[in-house]
Every structure is written in C-alpha cells, then in structure tokens.
Image (cartoon, rainbow, N blue to C red; front, top):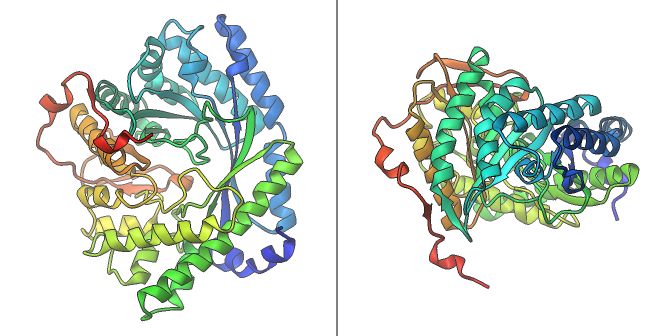
Length: 454
C-alpha cells in the first residue's frame, strides 16, 4: 500500500534534482470506431477520444498540485491507425484526414501529443499499411500533436526490409515537408523493433491490440536524482554503486505508482503499467550523460561507456520492478541526443559518434533517438541505419528504435533547433559509403534461430 508519506520523502528530489512524472498516457482502443465511411469513422474517433480523455489533463494537473509532484506531459495513445482505417481509406489522403481527426481530438482534450498514427508491419505490409506509411510525411507536416510509429521488425518475425526501404524515403520526405522548421516532423516519427503494446512515451506510443478498451500508463523519470545519489558514493566499489542505483530507482518508481493509481481512480480507467525509464530533458541536471560522467567517464563515448550504460539500465530495472505492481513499456535509460544536454556536449567534444551510439543501444531502453544528421543524407543510408538498429533489437530480443532527423539545408557542424522538450542537436556525420544494393533487395530478413521458443 502506498501512502502520502512516501511522497514526502521525495520532496528534495522534486525540488532540487528534477524528479518528475514525465507522462500520464491514456491508451484508448478505437476498434469500435471502425466504419467503411471515412467521415463517420473520423467523427467516431474524435467522439470516443474526447469522451474518455476529457478530464485527463485537468486530473493530471490536480494530482500534481495536491501531491507536489510535477507531471510534465499528458498524452493519448490509440490503436494503430492502419488497422482502424483499413475499411474506409482508399488513398493516402484518406489517412491524412484521420490524422486531422486525431489532431482535433488532441487539441480538444488539451494533451501534449497523441500517438498511434502507426502500422505494424514486422512480417509484411497490407495495402492499408502501405497507404498509411506513404501518408506519414504529409500527416506530420499538417498536424501539431500527432506522432507516428512503424514497427518494422521483431525477434519472432524478422525484419521487413520492404518496409525498412520505404521508411528511408518516408523519413526524408517528412524532413522535406517540415524543412522550414529544421525538419522537426521527423521528431514525431520512429521506426521500431519489438515494440511494446503499453509504451507511454512518444513518438513510439500506441495502444496495443491486446490491451483493454482504455488504460492508464505512467512514465517516470529521474536522471538528476540518480546522478545525485551516485555522487554520494564516489570512489566506492561496483556493489555499492549498484545498490545505490537500485535504491534510488525504487524511490522514483514509487512516485510513479502513486500517480498512476490515483489517476486511474479519478478517471475511472484501469491502471496499466509504470514505465520506469530514465528520460532526460535539455534542462541542466536532468541528463543520463551526466550519470555516466558521475560513474567515472570523462564523456559518454569514452571506453567503458557501453558497460556503464548496461549496468545503469539493469540496476534501474531491478530497483524499479520492486516498487510497482506492474511495470512495462520501455523501462530503462534513454539516450536521445537532442534531449540530453550532456549527450550534446559529448557530440560537440568529439567523444560520441553514430557508431558508438549504436553500440550503446544494445544495452539501453530504445535506440538511435533524436539524432540530427545532414539533410543531404541519401534515403538508402537512412534505410541502412534503420536496418542495423532493427537487427540489434531482433537478435537481442529487445526494443530498439530509430528517430533520425535529416535536417534539410544543414550539414555537419551546424545545429538544429527544435524547442521545448525536444531541445537542439548538433548535426552528426553519417558514414558516406553506400548500402544501396543491400537495402534494395526485396523481402524479409528471417527471424534468428533463438526465436523458435514456444
């Protein structure tokens, strides 16, 4: 049983160490909205979302005020739209109309983002899936709140290279469609392997097909808290360091559990999971990179970085899993370059490159996240990077993702400005050698041998 006294103990963390609940995300099933008439479908979508989530923002703000816990974002995730729009959508423009409906619902409920303009194509694409993929660039350029995700691989099915090839073009088209804003549309688009059904974090959030009609998922965050705790054990051995991280993760996750249960009770929507990820922001002192520095690395990217990140991720999970009745989502450490001041500094110092970031993604929560690359990067190179990250997820049985931002009109050494929680990013170089013949092959990379477990 959680009581308010447990939250009192975290006051210092909240006031001085950037502890917050990063998001309350309401997952909403849209299966009962399916209709062969597009206008009727859009009306049903808006009506259902606004009916269920009309009090989401105000409830989050009330809980934050009453408990003294900052709740940064309130979000919505819906059933992958390629499944919902299949009967009504005959063209990509039809899917854009659904994106407008989602944007309208988000605006009416007051949430920060709505995720689920998505397709699940790990093994193959239906006509509906392909139409949605080809509509993404337009949909993200004409909406404000909509986020898109494409699941292109899994350990069980392998990697759909036709989808990966297409997504290189989609990412580039999205960059061009929002070129006047440093290609920020790509910040709302992610390609995933082994995507969880209950992720509360955008852009990858969608409401999985195995979920209930509606659910409340909460994402907590506390890089600053973990850094401060580690600072207190400088020079101690690894056992002490690990115990410190676990204890801190436990405290942080208890806050998320409290908020999740209270939001569930007040909204009358079942509690789903707490995602105990360490999600940084551009704010000073709210950085996963700073944790790695406090462990003893001069900069992320130095030798030993992957080992340090692996240990951090594992201890966060071990501590957090004991603090919540149900954990899920991604649950670990995020390393988005633009959203982490320490990561930005490591790139600018020359300590961190794309290849080292890729190695780090084998042991952390997600993947190559919020990375700005030159705007003239070829589509096939983007597809190749996506394929690499899908392979890491597939072989290691973990979630991986790619959120690249080819910034049109800018090159290495320049900076892209996204604003708010998205921050800014130095533009990183991409390997100049071609993978065109490889990614242009048709079909699917088969699942690895260890996928055949039953």
